[in-house]
Image (cartoon, rainbow, N blue to C red; front, side):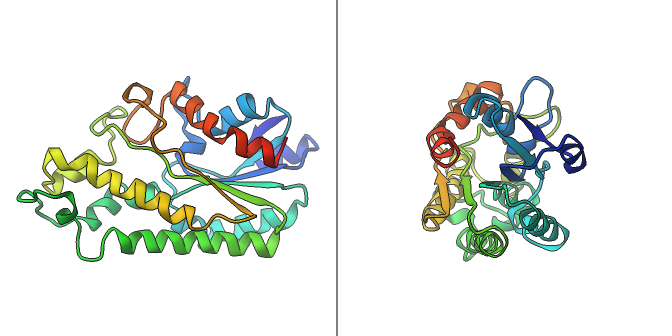
Length: 249
């Protein structure tokens, strides 16, 4: 079938979604020739058999996806289509990147010899708890409006720090601002990725599938600090294959 970014166009073509996707740039990365996970799920995993409606946009945060207007759109879309069987969700990365990352770090970590000393008191546990609350909100929304749909999500991967998209970077510049020693920066990021994985694993259940994607990509599979390249997205999609085909053959 196809991935639709415009609900009106989908309706004009007489289709209803089998899959609803909400998320960030891992679902909506826009650089020509690179693609994103939606492309790979549609073409590589499901072989164009299903209709996917994607609400995702770059930069969105998990906490914001289940709040305000975004929450209303998600609720109404789930309510409006009895055909939805899978709810794909990609959220949490932007909640701990850029300015959000800086807020979690001490202002001057230059003297740290252990990465844990770079976090403000209570972090990153406090931020992960806020993200967990957003995921539990997501489950509650699904339970209320489309309880038969299964949520499928992931935990990103260990980024290559300093690899930019044009002038843009989301991790290393903020680690530098906090004066995190270079030798500790990867460990700071890994603490989030691993803690995020542990949190999502704790939510697993009959209607909640967590695909652990960390550890999948090599350095050459990244386009920049936050996004895999085309081959990287293919590898990540491959991690989802078994789960997605079990839920939607």
